Image (tube, rainbow, N blue to C red; front, side, top):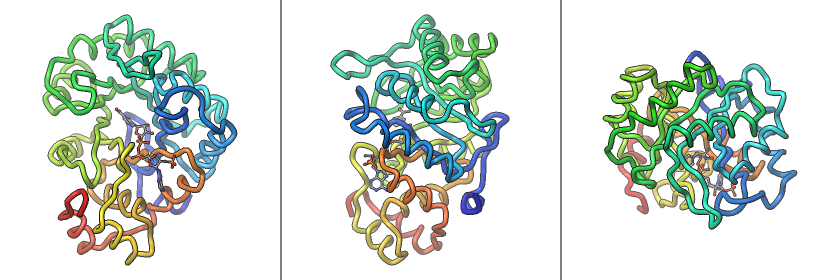
Length: 290
Ligand SMILES: NC(=O)c1ccc[n+]([C@@H]2O[C@H](COP(=O)([O-])OP(=O)(O)OC[C@H]3O[C@@H](n4cnc5c(N)ncnc54)[C@H](OP(=O)(O)O)[C@@H]3O)[C@@H](O)[C@H]2O)c1
């Protein structure tokens, strides 16, 4: 698609993907638990993403659980050669919708097989280890046992490439001593920039940085600075938030999530928005709710 060329591409392992992708978490039910309110609409979002040129979709078997992967399979299987589906392992859902760490080698192996079965794949293109030391933010602690277990599954041919999620720079370095890391998926957006230095460091090593909650996640971004900039650019605040991330660093790959085809189209169109240095400086200087 011509408009995707504007945002360019970046590599995930040995694959090249458009920098604007799609995150499928919103396709499960409320609280990322159970089936979606509108199954047909969920299928339509995925098909619209593909028709628009999206070739990078982020998911996990713990969304639903199982629900999101099965919807992806129903909507898009058999998968086109250019599509890269990235998944993550390391958590399970309780019956009360809670998120529980599941990081033993046996649980990680089970999670890989769950992803393979529910996505309908023989090999997973990219698997992120979702670190769960602190569920809400990266926290230090060795990930050697978990990452080694995934490296073994990679050697067995079940996984092509590995990544990390909710990781510190120290954990990225530890993982890279075990096996190559092709991407890091941490929380990062206009209001959460703790990873500024990590984004740069990964870029220098050719590693993709994939911000989760690019639009603020469960608390969508709200800021007068953002709204004012959007009004001046004849764009929406969400589009400006995504354009700011695209401008932030060339190794940033976007996976905004939505359950709405209208929102999807709005988000994808953010690749056409070019922010001037002045607007970027204004946004850089904003505080979350200013
Ligand atoms: N590794 C991790 O720990 C982790 C954690 C969270 C997420 N993720 C991944 O990151 C992806 C993105 O995160 P996310 O989906 O949680 O958050 P997000 O992309 O920051 O925002 C999604 C929220 O924004 C709304 N939204 C989307 N587009 C909009 C638009 N144009 N206008 C108004 N509202 C809009 C969505 O509601 P509607 O459905 O109504 O559009 C949804 O409530 C996920 O899909 C998932 O794949 C990873």
